[in-house]
Length: 126
Image: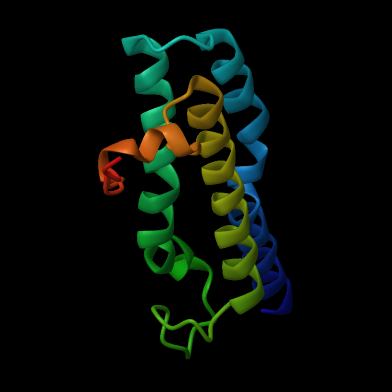
């Protein structure tokens, strides 16, 4: 019984770091997609940004098979450290996607991106 519990905990850790394991391949795909704004690169980055949200939303269901038997498997109290690492790895994936969007020029980071919301000052009469 103790070895089964240890095996379940090991599998929970494997699931917790699985987003970080796929990060090098995703970074390579981002590199190969180029820096231009094309439909292919947009699709790759969109999926890279969507995946962490889907993973975090389904986190309790993903960790349910590894929860200890007498506990509520949908609670944050079961496997909290593994779930925290899982969220951190997914946020790292999200950060890589946002960095790619920024390098493609799609994030509004400069003052020129917000000119539509600027108001003109009053013209002084001479």
